[in-house]
Amino acid sequence: MIDGEYSPDNAPGAADASRGTGAPAPLPERASDTTADHPWPVHHLSAKIGDYVHRMGPVWVEGQVLRPSRWKNLVFFDLRDASENNTLGVSAPAPVLDRMGADLDDGSRVVVHARPRWWSRGGQLKLDAAEIRHAGVGDLLARIEALKEALAAEGLFDPERKRPLPLIPRTVGLVCATQGDAEHDVVVNATQRWPAVRFEIRRVSVQGTHAVREVTAALRELDALPEVDVIVVARGGGSFEDLIAFSDESLVRAAAAIETPLVSAIGHEKDSPVLDLVADYRASTPTDAGKRIVPDAAQERANLDQARRDMRAAIESRLDRAAQGLEQFRSRPVLAAPERMLDPHREQLGRAREAAGRALVSVLSHADATTRELAASLRALSPQGTLDRGYAIVRDAHGAVVRRASAVSTDDALGIRIAEGELDAVVTQSRPAQA
Image (tube, rainbow, N blue to C red):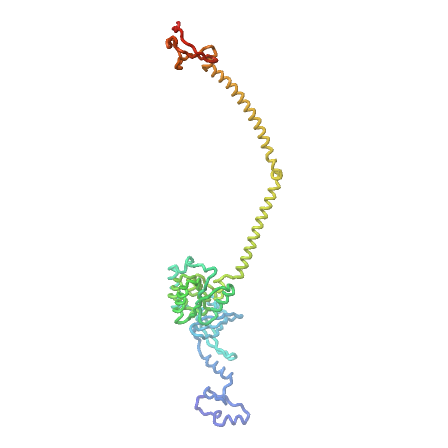
């Protein structure tokens, strides 16, 4: 019925007459006809909405897949708007998903050809999908892929650039959101493992128009602090669009330029931001980052205790082996009666002594005979031998040997050396030698 049209049902007093007769009052035909006294029941409004929705034709809609599940021959998931916090439920027969040729993963972007449907029982608007396609790489994704290729060509992703994280950092620099669980997850997990750890926290925007500038400034500020040994950039995940700031070229280059080791804890598994690739360590979540940046004090103490036990056991084992070796060495006969080692040498020494004695006797005997022969030769050659045979040596007053009679004159004094003793004489006559 059109507003303003006359009908017996909506004539003045008709409702009152109906109440008087006991017949149910007719429902208002249009929404504008409803009043507090004449409302529509919920089911009637739901049916009206369903009629309106079902008159819509199929529509192509793009969004992000959330919580996909499969039940018997049906597939269910939520389709989330990429830029607004709006979500619609989607259902599709399993063959529709099979025709995609790829898995329907949580977080993937798809284009769905579906007909809107109103579920009156639950009062929900859902989509019955007849076709699902993975969304093509848009301009934004294409730019990010190009950036990745350029930075990779520059070597910013090379493993050789990755710096090791300090074993025990003096201070941890933390860049996180002003609100959220990322800060709590990092700080709590780190202090539980290493209570002495200190934090220098910079709370910034981690999405939106100010995120790149604020995160970049926080990184440079923390890198300038000499006591900060490692920096963590943490965020509790989010959609690809929410994390787009962490793929900004200026932020990524600033992160690559800092000298302090960097941990990226963005926490998004499907669309890894470029910051993850340039960071020295990529943590899967802020909780993982809190556990990675510091050692576990309890575990380290346990390791030290175990190391002490291992060293003690190794030393004791070595001492035991040395003691056993010494005992075996001491039990040898040569050490039990060490003088027995001298027996063969004693016999050899006796034989050597006898041989040396014989050799010495032989040498001495030979030397004695030689000496006698030599003495005889010497005696034969000695002037004394000549004297012993009756000859004499005559010397003048000057001690010169007189060889010729003509060398002396009468009354010259002479000294005569004979075999035993000397004689003094005076020349009385000199005769020449006879032929």
